[in-house]
Image (cartoon, rainbow, N blue to C red; front, side):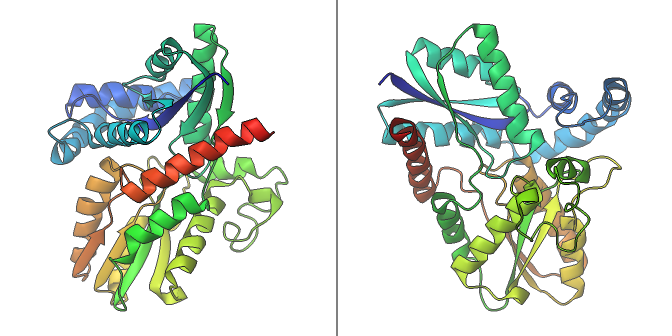
Length: 343
């Protein structure tokens, strides 16, 4: 058996919390047709002509609020996860990369190749499948492999929305933050409805039946929204929560198109107006803390909750390099490599 390697892939982050660095990052991110899937001329007009002129000035100060001494939180935690895995599995080579920005996927692949890796596991750090995350990451990775003229044996981790190695550490991270008078909100990264509708090859289920995301069918087994509901229901079951104790929402909207609903902003306001005083938010789609959790939820959403009558809001940290999650992730990796041997 040849040397084994794992490339962990996250979305990306600016190198510095500056307007120019944020602009460079957003340019690469938003010009990806898997992120904004409209005709190229319109995408370039929207991104270059409008978004890049406005958003970097708004977003750079937000990054400044959460920046760590070691750098961007997403990069710091991704590095810690990678190093923790390396310490547990010394016989496997680990590298992490960003789909957009640095360290690049190409640089990660080159390091693994130079270390003699012959069997490569591609591990996009997204429990739920989406065109804009998992699919884009894998497409770009295969493009770089072709560019390098490198052909190791490839394994893909795939989605793992209900894998016990993921949901048990997730439930454990929530347990201490809930009580009888606490409402739990599962806030997932949002997606345009057009992205999830495309997954439904039958064209008869998505957005056409009641509770389409929470209903399990062949039509939505790879639907991001459905997989988010699967994670939620699994964790709710592990925690023994009643229906009135939890809710689900989607955050981080961008642009005027229709997105998955309800939005986290709207749901938090609704809960506060209903008299919920203590709210706990968990963001299961994010395996490492970054702008969406540390600023959007823990600062922006917190202020919104308090403005509408809420009193106490807790944002649970992502799994990051928690010991039980690292063990769970190692279990998933070993299981994937073992499945190739027994296949």
